[in-house]
Length: 208
Image 1 (cartoon, rainbow, N blue to C red):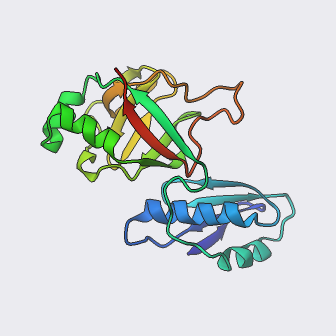
Image 2: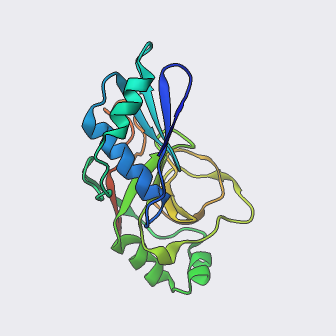
C-alpha cells in the first residue's frame, strides 16, 4: 500500500489490488480504518482505487501512516459494517432490452440476476446520495450507453461496467437504465442524509 500526503492534514492510501479486484481492496482498507478509530482521523472516504483519510489540522501524518501500516486489513465481508438495505425496484427501464441483448439473458433473467446477488456500497460520488454498488452478478457487466442522456429521472436504477446504482435526483447520465425505485436516496432531514452508506449491503427486490 502507498500512502501519500494529501495537503497537510490528510493521507491518500492506494491499496494493492486483491485477487478479487481493487474495489474489494478499497472496501477492506476503508473498513479497517473505520474499525480502528485512528487517532485524529475525522473522515474515511473510499473512492474507486483509493481511500482518503481526513485528519484534524496539525495531525502528525507520519504517526498516522505508522498506525495505518499496523492495521489488520482483512477481506471485505458484504454488509458487515453498515447493515443491509433493501430497495424495491420496478423493472421497466428503457434499456432493459439492450442489457438483455448485451448479456445474452432475457428480461426475466436480467431481473433475476440483479435481485439474486447482494451488492455492496463501494464508494459514493457523482451526486449527493449516489452510491457505486459492486459485487453483483458478473453477468450484468455492461458498458455505458454510447450516448448519455441529458436527463435521467430520480430513482432510476442503472448498470455501468461492474457497478449498479440509483440516481438520487434528476441529472445527466450514461448508465444503462433497467428500472426505477421510489426509495429516497438523499434526505437532508435524515441522519445520515444518504440512504446507502459505504460498506452497506444492498439487495434489490422486484416490486409489483
